[in-house]
Amino acid sequence: MTAGISSAIGTASTSSTGTAADKQEIAGNFQQFLTLLTTQLKNQNPLDPLDTNQFTQQLVQYAGVEQQLKSNDRLDSILSNAKSSSAASATGFIGQNVTADGRTAQLKDGSATWSLTPSRAAKQATITISDAKGNVVATQTKALSAGAQTFAWDGRSSSGFTSANGTYSIKVDAVDATGSRVSVDTKLTGKVDSIDLSGTEPVLLVGNSRLPVSSVRSIGTGLST
Image (cartoon, rainbow, N blue to C red; front, side, top):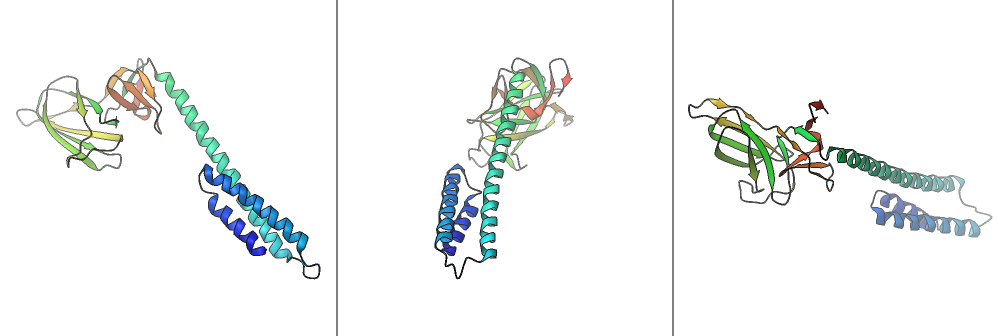
């Protein structure tokens, strides 16, 4: 009987870090523990009762697993509330003019765009795209005209594979006809049309560009975030 109780506790401890489906199993294990414990107390030999230390240890194990389950529930609640708060704050960007650090962009459904503004025409610009871990996934070479323009990437890596959705950064090294370096500004300014809340971080949709909220540097008439 004691082995059965220990087994029930052990199974509950293992499952306590699982998903919502595991929580139902944990509750069942708790009920099984109580049933086994009650049965054991009712049927123990009066001349050889359950060892006090062993009984106390079982109760401590039970209390520990129950506390862990409650802690997991509280953590889930905190994370849910934090995400809801972030989403509610992000909706305040709709209709606002924002300026964002345009070095990063979101690739979704095979499309990511950046705003590039060379200080003057560049005869050759090497465009390097890296993933969130800093790994280079694609490199392109093209000429850039002077003034603001949009650079679109279809998510194809240099090796021909389709890159996964996520955050990617851009680096531009450009030179003019004389070989002199040309600075290229990647900041993007525009009106927020809508918000994408499907990911872990709200993403602002400005025209064809997708900007993580964390990339915003100013709102409206230069009010810094």
